[in-house]
Structure formats: C-alpha cells, structure tokens
Length: 199
Image 1 (cartoon, rainbow, N blue to C red):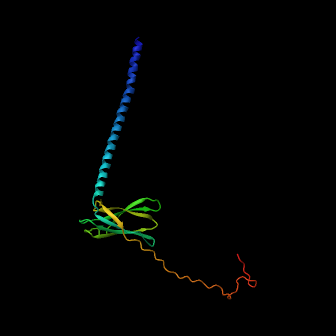
Image 2: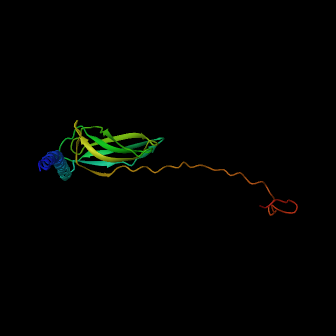
Image 3: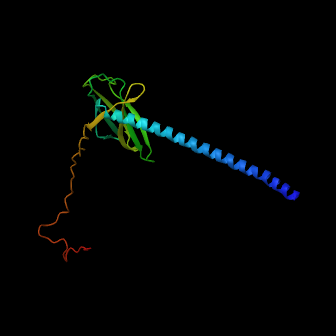
C-alpha cells in the first residue's frame, strides 16, 4: 500500500512541470495577441487621422489653377511644362510643381519637383514651370501635386489644358521623275521588230 502512495505522489510532482509550461505559453500567447491588437488599433487610428486630414485638405477651395501643356518633342528631347495661376486672395511663396515620371526601360516611377519662375505669386499672377527630358529615357509624365514653402506643404489646386502641341510641319519636297525613253508615237513597246519579255 505504501508503494502505491509514493507512486501517486511521484506522478503528481511530475505533472506540475507540463502544467507550468502550458500556463507560461498561454500567458505569452495572450500577451502577443494583446500587443498585436494594440498595434493594429494604433495604426488604424493613424490612418483614420491622415485620411480625415486629406479629406479636410480636399474640401478646401483650390488656391491655384495649373495649366498643363502638352509634351513638346524637340530634337531628341521632350519639354514638359505649364503655367500656375494664383487664384487665391493671398500671396503664395516658394511654389513648386511635383511631377511623376515613368522610365521607359523598367516602368519605375520617380517624382521631381519643378520650381516656378517666379516662385512667388501675388493673387492672379502666373508663374511658369518646365523640364527637359531625354525622349528615350522617359515614357510618360503626370502632374501629382503643388507644393509651397520649405516644408513642401501640399496646396489644393485645379487643372486645365494648357498649350497644345503645334502641328508638325512637313516640308514640301519636289520630286522630279525622269522622262521615259523616247519612243515614236503610236509605236508598240513590244512588237516583232522590237521584242521585250513580259513578266
């Protein structure tokens, strides 16, 4: 009878370790799930705040009108440009236009900031932007933003068609056709006296 009680105590002592391990694993998993949930809530709150800020910016009345010219090929280069008109009642300083360019070889998009000339616009004043690119390097260009100041704050704007590409001029060429070999009027080109092979 004593041996069985000792065996009973030995079994209960040995079974505590797996229970402790299971309890510790449960606590670790619970902590991981809780921290993941907290991280997702924080990220969701940040995304909601940035979305509401973007919505608030889009509700603001446009401060500028950007006229986008058609791309103009010139030699081996392409000129991209346009005009920015200040449509607000305030001065706008440090203006630049953000353009997205797509490379031909790999399709990767890159952005460039083009400074306005002049970069300070009074109400109803206009400034011009332009960029020369190698035609073989880039396939397309797209306006993506209007920035102001050293911190590059986005300004609300509207767009419109600018200058159209002038029609290509084809230089007139004079083509001179040589006279056919002289033959007598009314004479057949292929006759028994003057045989010629007909294909």
